[in-house]
Image (cartoon, rainbow, N blue to C red; front, side):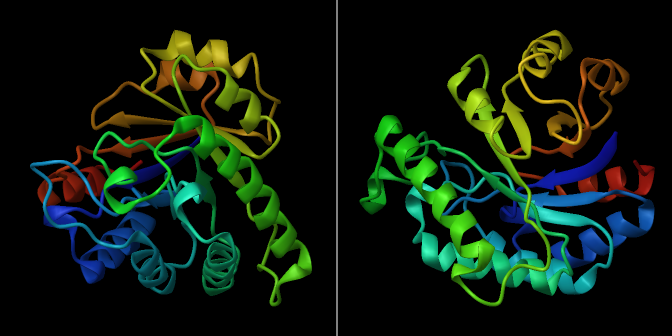
Length: 241
């Protein structure tokens, strides 16, 4: 089981230099990954929001070992050819430490509909499937330079929906959202491939991780609220994985 931090680049953490510093500190403390939320807008009371992709570039330069990536990016709101260039560039910049977390995304905060993006979930699912196929084509050499390594794809699935779980089995990992407990995770693990397929869970600070590991989690991410407090993140880093 590997350990990581999962933070929103919002409000108190809306400082790219600070995020790079936190990622460097997390690496020194022994964490294996540092992952960011990917949103262009969010509901109140969140106000300040950073672009995670620019932040990940800063993090890649500030670190040497931790895996980095967005959790999650909806390809439905991205130009896939531009996304291909960004992901390959980040993978090269990080020397093969980039993981691409993808999913349908949510319009709960209106960040699709208010900007004229596709808000229908079924349509976004089709765009997700098409976008992932195109990304792999670009990564395989349709675009040069190619990534530093074969970029893993982790797909999000909101409990208890199974269609996203089945989609994830075609790729490299599953990031289940809104799990009610380790028993639910065990159900999903029975439906996905064995290792090296990754099963990634997020939990707040202080969670007993052993039941999640026993249920089949390969990554346990310490997560924070949509208004993360810098002091809480620093404390979690200081406590170590």
